[in-house]
Length: 220
Image (cartoon, rainbow, N blue to C red):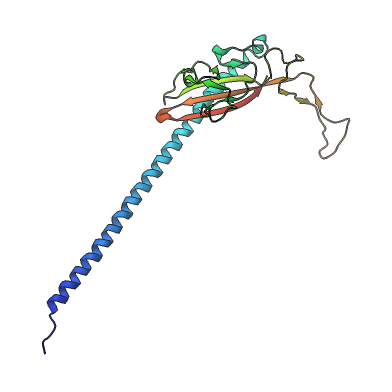
């Protein structure tokens, strides 16, 4: 009786071990590639978030500049008319697309846009192109900041005109010193003068194509 050839069994075992090792090596390589891709995506997201936050912080310069501009003119008749060169409009424009992302063919309600990039609103036809303020000095991070001021009125002119309708703020004075009690004699009294609300929209364009839009409501 002939004994089995042990060399053939040993060669078969070595071949199976090599195949298993190759499969494990391929799986480990795929896992390493997936890990590298995941880390790269995380770093990209973190970087984009950092640029976004920097743009939001840079928008404060635009809001402060717009508020300073309003503060110097709030009590004058300049607020009754549009001043496109300064990025100011005395009435609300219906159908205004602040971001410029809504195409008129897809959204017929869009009737106006803002010329943030000095390109005539992307050469879009059939819409009203509002002019933004001149760009503020570029900050060290490379942010370009512009703003648009809108008086929240239906039309231009005096907010007290019969043909006009504005969003007004009326502050109160005095009030009851007794908490939790209702008293007609101690109720808050509203001041006779109203102030008009203004909407400030700030556009920031930063590095890597970062864009931010920030809106602020103030009243004068």
